[in-house]
Length: 294
Image (cartoon, rainbow, N blue to C red):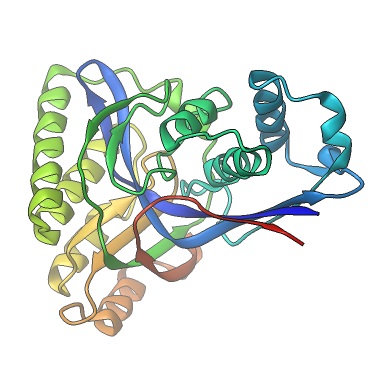
């Protein structure tokens, strides 16, 4: 019996997001929270999947002309520790993982670029399916620029109350001024330099600038406060869910005064406005797959 096991990371939103060369784009920030999928032979339970995951299955079957009867023998098991509607790529992790899993199960040979393009036919998507960072058009699925590198650092994530419909948010993000476009081009250049030189300082600064630029589109009430506290307690930069509710403080374990930061944050930020604080790791992207015969 065939079995494919898939592990796909979520994100703490995006390192940067905006418009570049006339296209909407982002660079996702993968973290060590995962969507997990098992696809194996069984009695068939497609109807139990979430709507977006079912759409992805249908899209793969249609694209590759897989006989419909094959669905009757597919058993799906899906679990996730990625919070929903927070800008942490829970949906993208599910559908990208499903695409990769079906590709392995039916030996379709889908590449990360093809998976990214396929996901964007379902909804605006993050680019967590790529191992190395790139500037990704989250609407069309095209890659605008490759950065040839990854980011490795710790991140403290504040999960604020509320949720965002990513689909609706991305339908209204075409109002960038000429000044915004110039600012974002500078952010991209600074981020690219940081990745190329492995400078977490430059990467963090670019992330913080992108977070502040995004305030015109989705205001986060405590962003300025957390940026200030990050600087005070040795953080490297502020990473947000540009279409979500999370704010993350990128840091290393040596220089960041975590206990002091949390104590100060709790002084300035009421307990009532956030749900949890997560302690995670920024990691390379990419989908991990195990295919076996059991």
